[in-house]
Length: 161
Image (cartoon, rainbow, N blue to C red):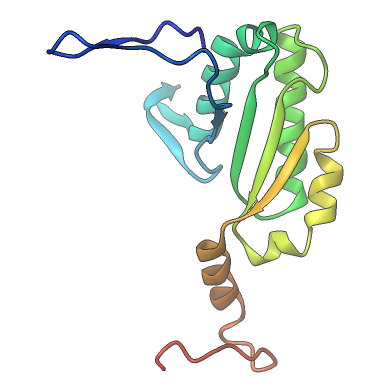
């Protein structure tokens, strides 16, 4: 973020980021995962919020100053309720850190069949900050099988053939 990373190889060659670099999108843990190395009242904190908080607190202003911004790639979303939650988290961080409203931008990874049924609602909940929806096909396929395998009204391919 601050372009201070550098590496000097044993042969003396030096490596630094190029003047133009790819845009970084941070992918926090899924909401179901904890961060066991950070405890509050003796209990692990939510990994997603830990990742989000560290990234935004330490980098948002610098990224905005450089004409970019804090961009997130949100995984494992299953419903618009989670999208609403993430929007509230982003709004709270923007307010607390005095960042312009809507400056934290997000792309959502659709990895669950149930989220596919709520994509318009997810877009609506994140309307101030959404940049994209993306499909994670292997998790999506697995979630479809898991959700509908025992439903006789669903026709799914035989995985054994």
